[in-house]
Image (cartoon, rainbow, N blue to C red; front, side):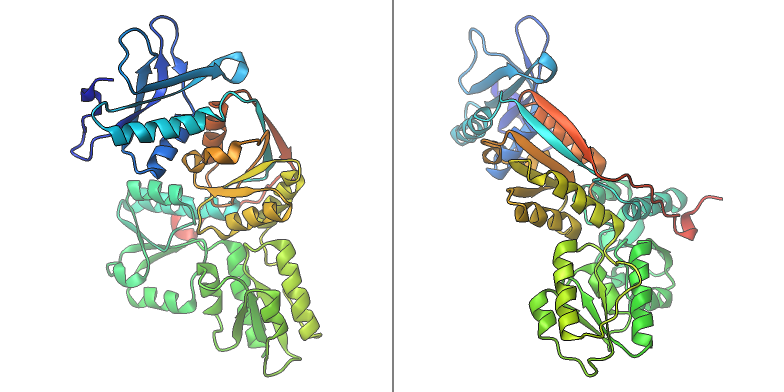
Length: 418
């Protein structure tokens, strides 16, 4: 490729590798390269600046450094991979050869995807995201959001582009500004601060988290020590602890539960974070019950329906696969629990924000791939992963549905339409 093809377009560092989004033969139709996002991800991990664009298939006079491959694709067609490094940049050429070689080695192989259902957005996440969207429509930007509205980097980035401003604490919000509380809930102290600063609050707390908050107040109000099972530092846990901090203790595992000391062992209740692993949480509750035989709990499970459904759906396919990919961000508790669940089934599993995070080595020998997404991951990300995998060769996709979700939550009253 001519060196001019690598000139910077926006004043930033020039892209030194061109990743093919299509291969162009001298005659005939273009060869699509949907797996280019995988190649681009490998280059990004190597620190190589790159951009996407069409690359001519090699012919007479092709410059050194152009790498292309065409192989059988989905639906009887063809697919390709391509990269071209700036000829005056040996380091870029080395990075391009390494990334291209790694992905070419696992391309052209038939695979199948077992798609878990339910997956992706739950009702509480849909409600929270829509609350921010409605607030932006009604008030215009900026709309402030305390913490991430849901734990997903794509969702946050897209809302930021539309004018949402995410802050860690309310002292970063101008007095009187429109402010959304995230789906994970907040403590009474945060509500009080918002009122003091006269913020226009839209509370997008998931109703199932609000249920746990109400239980914390009720259990503490009857004089119990409230044991909250959850992960220290998680925003949902921080909010729940704030409901009755003087009467609530946090335990993270069965060992802590078994060693817990309280003032009155006959008056102990438990609650759980809504996004925990069902099987592991049951072990913690058993340890608490062994420790405190009169232990009382919520009338219905605190772990939310969406978390449970996604775990059951993955459990139904994990043992049949060679690899599990979980779409979700690293700070998403329910997504991380899915990775751990697959691993307990004996299947290697990886958490990915999108297709660019997939590593070529994971696919070596992986004829069957399990695919799911945490409750805060947009469905479009799953579609993008499937499209990228289709770009590596013949791919069959089979959905395994264990239940159908029909839950819907009404929007917070300030953003409901009349």
